[in-house]
Image (cartoon, rainbow, N blue to C red; front, side):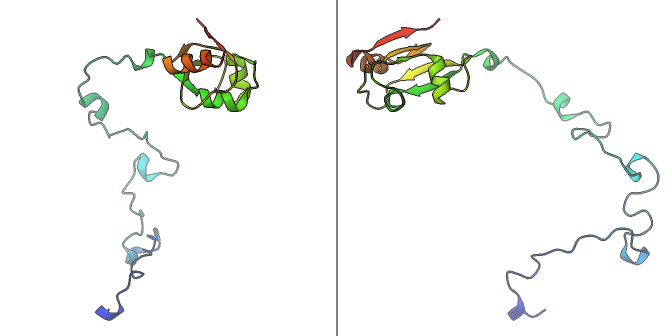
Length: 149
């Protein structure tokens, strides 16, 4: 191949290895599977993490410390501006209403109301937590805040 014939396309498509097509190919007879054993037979599959008798990675690495991440309280966040868009003036906003509006995944979620955006409607909002700015905005419009236990 000459240097003026080299393009980005040359070598872009590597031909697949044709196995079991005679000795001349270099992949004849046992087709690169070796002699005997489970690996040579059809239907063989090994566990992804199996390292062939070598001490597995997860056992070689030292384990230290304790993580409390499994026990943290996670909150779904809803902003005051979202409440303003979806609910009418004087509405009582509970977690059930937030689920039906699509703001929260399910009834068992903990909900925190944040004060991002503007609120122009008087709402009665009940949730697990409120930010200070959210409380101020809700009470500033004549609404009330109820903390659910």
